[in-house]
Every structure is written in structure tokens, then in C-alpha cells.
Length: 207
Image (cartoon, rainbow, N blue to C red; front, side, top):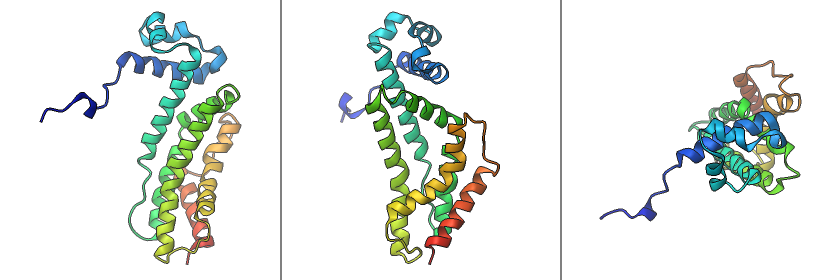
């Protein structure tokens, strides 16, 4: 049977992707106010008329950039999955992948951009936050529930416990560099931070 067009997603638009790529760089380095449409179009290899045909203006372009970056976050988080095995192995698998994700300079740069423009683009910022929370937390919470059912962990509130594990990772690899403009970076290796967080977590919740 011949496939219909509705059965396949639309092909990516190379011009749109190029504009989003260069707009992301401009917004991250120059901020919303400093980024200008004409240089973005020129760097993307399109005319300003083409850019405006795809995006009504800078506000719509910024929204598209954040949505595109959030999609990248989601694709990266597909790698954060739980391995089979005992609690320590499963939690370490998650923690190492999550720490590597949160330590990525690209992730921090986009978060800084969203935070800086939150008053102007509140809905965009909240959508990015909500999707990230779902991507990050659900994988871990589901695994914690399984480990509780298997008798390997003793946890009353899995959502709280998940937040504690993620917080031990986020603070050194993400929040300290974020608020200090990367002037303060973690001394320990990312994998060591993840391993230490898991050991502390197991000391609290392990059976």
C-alpha cells in the first residue's frame, strides 16, 4: 500500500534550520536585545525577506530558538536511561549521564538566556522548564519506584528522593558555574560527582 503524506513527518527546511542555528548563537552571545535580524540572516545565508517569511519578527524567532533548544535537550535526555541490575548500578548509570548533560556548556548558555528573558517570555520559559522536569524526573522516579518494589530501597516520597539525588549533581556541575559565569567550576570530575551523589543517596535510602 502506498504511504500517504500524513504518515510521514515533514522534511526539515534547511533554510529554517540554518536561521535557527545562527539565531541561537546570536541570542546566546548577545542577548535578546543585542541580537539583530540582519546579521542573523546574513550568517544563515538567507535574505532578511526570507527570514521574515518564516518568522514574523525577533520575538517569534526567539521563541522558535528556545523551542528548538528544548527539543535538543529532549533528544540528549533520551540517552539518560536506567541500566538493568542492582540499585547502585542503575542509579550510577542515570547519575553519570545526567551529570554529563548538566555539565554541558551549551546547556548552561541556553538556561542563562531563558532566565535573562523570562520576564518578557514567561510562557516560553515555563514550557522549557516543565518539559525538562518531565524528561529528567520521570526516568528517575520510575526507576526508584521499581527499586522500592524490589526491596532495594526504602523511600516514602520518590519525587522528593529523586529531587535530592538530582540536586546533589546539579549544584556543583550546573548551578555554581551558571551563577558565576563559569568562573567557579567543579574541582571533582563529573563522574566522581555522580558516584559520590549515588553513595550518599544509598546511605540514606538503601536497604
